[in-house]
Image (cartoon, rainbow, N blue to C red; front, side, top):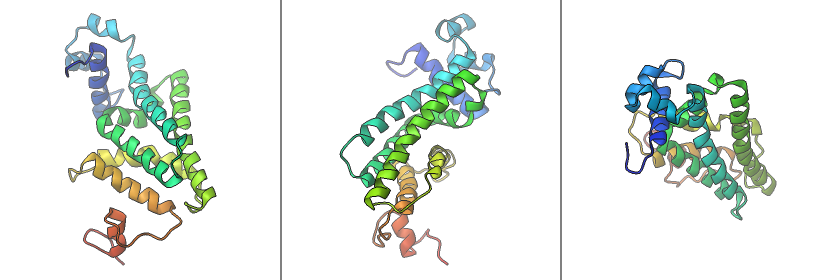
Length: 212
């Protein structure tokens, strides 16, 4: 247990790690009790059911992300900076709580219909902020015209970039790589060839970039 962490928070954190690694249906009560160090009575004193536990794991990261997104999209920042801020906030959240985000992405189908509707509504509300910023940027001419259906890939793009990284990159580096792809894929202006970013290196044909 980390300092100041409640028993309930520890159950949620440890369970998220197990669900992310083994899957919700692949994790039994015996494994949850062993991982949390609790007896059955102690476990159910804090958690009503395994289904409720799954819902709580999913709600925590999306609610935090939604709160941050609301502050960003209502700010006076230009669209490019808003999009960058959305990406950096999501990347930071992924870096801090990757197990819960992995469960969020992979296990929503394991929820009851009522819980699934709640999670998907929050997911849609969050992604609406990305859609709003892209729409704002297209209207101002900062972004080229794009099909907003691509926004549905945002969670997968971030989660799988973090999950499958085999280079030992930091969360900031992974976030920058994703945002290079997103920003320079929608920017109306030409890609800056002297950029120090991964996208700029690719434009210059520097080591690691694909050339044709």
